[in-house]
Image (cartoon, rainbow, N blue to C red):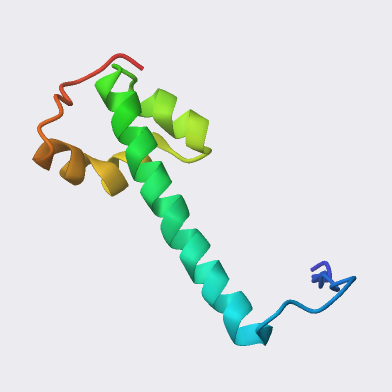
Length: 86
């Protein structure tokens, strides 16, 4: 079995204001923002007639993953998700 190497980034420059806790809070906020942006863009793609496969490819995930994450919300929003080509 080969060895596993883990690279650690070192921060060059001034330390961020607020310290580690604020930095981690920023990570949480960015994840939430990314999730909201993904929700909005997947909805926009589905309203524009994109297939699950097209949306999945654009997101770099499987068709099943994007469908599982978004289908229920999109159906509740009244978006027509009948079987699509792709």
